[in-house]
Image 1 (cartoon, rainbow, N blue to C red):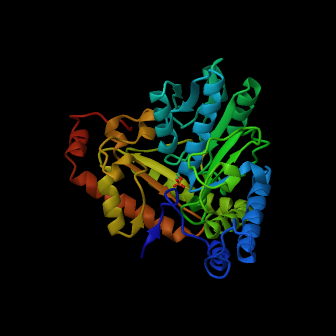
Image 2: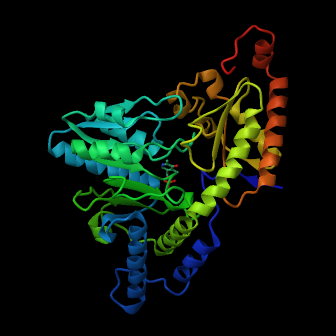
Image 3: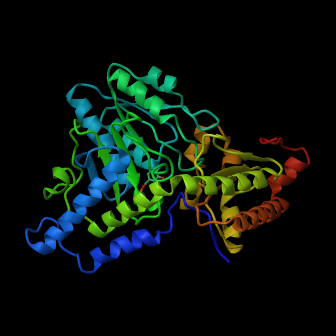
Length: 396
Ligand SMILES: *Cc1c(COP(=O)(O)O)cnc(C)c1O
């Protein structure tokens, strides 16, 4: 038995997406820049994929740049807005303390180049308010970048309202929508978004492909120099099979969104209910405004890493949602941003489910987590100190 509950890290590809790719790995292998018929078949496919993605996001096809994924799209969006700002003497950017590293590290790079960055504090429930964004915007602000939904704790931010604030103040608004795309309805016009990043492998499409939506009036900076692909904004022969897989996966995800959301929300709610029964545990992220498939907890007195390894032995694939997994001893910047103290930020668990998971699997996960948490506590000196009153509980 193996239960996959790490869909925020990546998803299994859908059969529809794989089937949409195979002709482009086999017969239709041309380079869309070639003038002959083999190349032109690929060019037509590329054109249709761009139109389909544009229709679903409610933008124009020429406002879409295909990238290697969410990280590249985040980099390009931020560096482009910064370059425009720089030309006007505007070198201030507003963001939040719990963005993905693709955003935070790009902002750090800009800081070294003399930009000033305001990282908004995040409330305990994983929220930033439109008013806080409004208050942080200055005369010299060239960009606001706020994620649509957080990849660790699953909170969904008030993006249309933040978009309205930015529009009113005349500041470009970028959103990293990698966790939301294909799971929540996104409309770049209604949500007043100027720049948006998404990635196919988070909605059952292939890895290594994503896109940047940029309103047509925004001149983009190219990160990769070379040929004239993607309106000269992203050189390199287009990854046609992956682009076709992304378009098919996105269409499928959007068509099944309501149905999947209902199913996945039920699974998630059962997880939250079951895991809340563990003493001295706390749910991270807003209870209501959260991604359908995300359940994220901190457990007092344990280490997230040992929890993950023991869960894996029981066949449950999960994540701590933190940097600990990558050999970094610092606790997750997201958990610190929402004010969780170091002691409990280390004991975190992220379970992210999809429509292929079952209720039976949720019961098995709950059982496995309960057993592993109890075992780890039984051998933890910290837990003994808590139990014997030599330390006080952070989570009541
Ligand atoms: C996964 C993820 C990314 C990175 O996307 P890649 O396609 O893997 O580069 C960026 N932002 C968020 C919120 C993500 O969850």
